[in-house]
Image (cartoon, rainbow, N blue to C red):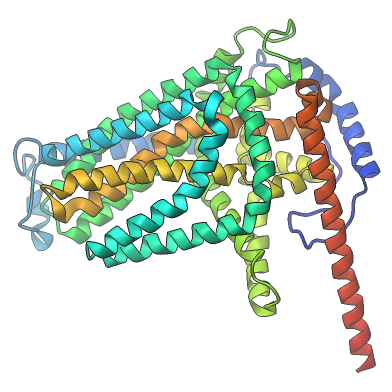
Length: 503
């Protein structure tokens, strides 16, 4: 697909204008140029090439090495101290407060069960109470962080108390900076929920991948419990837990994005063909999407999972901070530099790439670049910049992780009070991974809706005319807002030039 470059960039202060007539013309051209592919839908029966194979190999090698390390650390303290004689290599950093793997492994098991229940409850309430659950996660997270901060200070855990206090403050500032966007965000999330609720097979996929994640967590928690129980000093234990946590984050992100690709492919097909019962729908689309996701496209998923989440989170924070700076030109200049740097990275690492991977089987960078150019060429990027659905879903994921971590701290405190922060912090990550697997089905539907709206708006109109009208009205308002900001900026520049000439 060839798209003309949009006069807009991702910043609200960028130059250029686009009228509604130009936008419609651009979309008509797009629909005409790619109408055949959209009408026929992605050819799931066609053979695909393996993409990003190097990263697939790196991920699998990482799983093998980390799995072996987890097994060694877990077995070394299972039922017997120093079963594998590892302590002889750590003579300089020994700690006399050593324990057994089984002292901590059951706590991880309970934490995993709690987070699984939270994720499954979220999926069960997806159709009937999703809007209320989204609102609760947005407002409750700030309060929860503040309460945990107070409890940490009360327990003389000053570092963690300060960390949670800062997190609560940042969360509050972010909500205040985007509070005017929440009505549109809830509209998009409701549309995504409406879509996935009519596709029960994607719910089953999410549940199946949660079970796969639980199997890996059984090994991961076994090794992590062995590290916590080891005779290595606190510094060594923390470093090992950080390394294993980074591994768990990458593994969890890969599984989440695999579900993302599968669900995105299904939603895209439903929108393109006008319903899952349409005669033109290909046979067994879910199985074919699953096969491609875990074979030819799996390397692209592994590659994108390394960077996408971190860049997205940084982008949300910079956007929120940037809108509250005011007229501090020095600070605004520094933040603008970071903003444009992150925006450049977003072109190569964005969640919309997974839809292109699911539909066309491209490499990750190729998919991310094409998706971003598509949004900019149609003006839809202005709508995406206004939407906070990804941040809202992340808040729900963080809340689930914090609840899991709190339960782990309470369970650890009774017998092993000196290990509660180690257990709590790692349990938070476990909870986030499992709850995130439930949340990703909605996020996948959101990304697919935006891709289809940019490819051909009539696909959304055919699916839900009222939803289409609301999206189009919001897009028109955002384009007008950007045009006004551009005119204001040009006017200020002309006034500044005239002042300098007078001087």
